[in-house]
Image (cartoon, rainbow, N blue to C red; front, side, top):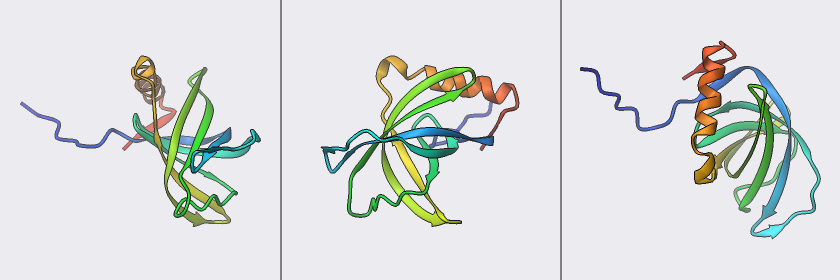
Length: 125
């Protein structure tokens, strides 16, 4: 019998990256005035996502919390998380965000991602 020994959640790469409005919620615990930043979702998993936008928020020296309203699989998902890593590439900044999903919504994101994978709109890694 095969046993899955995968320690990390599957990552789902969008065949066509999705553009959305990102909101920086707090920097070092201090609320930031609401102003959306255009961002691109590159991949996502149950625990995090890879996104890019043109703003450098210097996460080496700042704790940055973000909010994202994503429209995927004909559903709107609001997710919050903390930026954990970044790199500059092709004139934009790429970030990894660790998602903080409330217990009540923990099953919703994986269900949406499985649906998109079944429809061939995302690739599983």
